[in-house]
Image 1 (tube, rainbow, N blue to C red):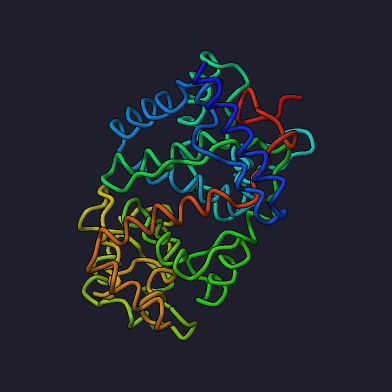
Image 2 (tube, one colour):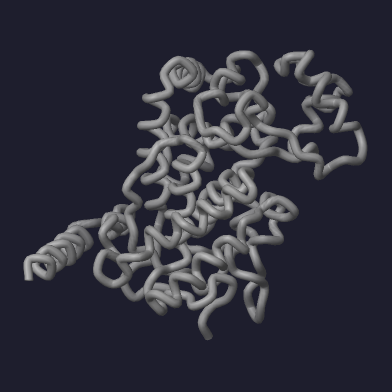
Length: 331
């Protein structure tokens, strides 16, 4: 009986938060215990499938973390990135930031299939993305956090939103900062979330201009340490090799640590969008330096910023749906 009383208290608490919230803070309806009674196996199922996927291919951790990020920056954290094109839906998978690079969809399918067998039409694809991102971080040595849950899935996608809202590797500092601000994320979140580039790879096409024609004058980016740039040119030529992959943190490409910030200080940030944190703004410079020197503080802030990002305009209550299959809407 005590369990049911506690659950009722949680529900009442969540309801009171919604009543007291403006639309901008409606994300307070999310809470980690959302599935404690309706699908208590959910966390374990996600962790098990993600663990097996990362064991098979360590790179998958970064791919799953990136999926959550790319989902939340378009229409909020609603699973829209998972939808395939069909009927009136044009998939976000076709956008410039996702085409030929977004991956991990089969892992999400596997998680969803297992959860549907345990708890049919209970756990949203959007929540699966949030849990998979947390578990990917932990499995590679990063921090853990209690993931607020209760998101529902969108009934559509936004190709234009995906093209416009997701920060690009060649965006200016101000453009990326603005894209974060429009999602309610501040400059500290900007620097901390960029630290996810401590794992994973980037394609040659994402940084080629830095090696050969950084400002359109035929010159390389001299803010990129030149011996590092020379090594990059070997497999990232002026033409061809667009899809060749390069670790964003060569020292520990599959370990979630603060090596990313140390690389920035050594002028070895692979993407222009990374380098600008160290060279174009005093506040971000100070944060980069601090996180390079203090991994614990980076981990704590990364966890806070991930929770904050996961709260970007989720669908809750009667909005959206719980998809049976993450790739398509139910009807």
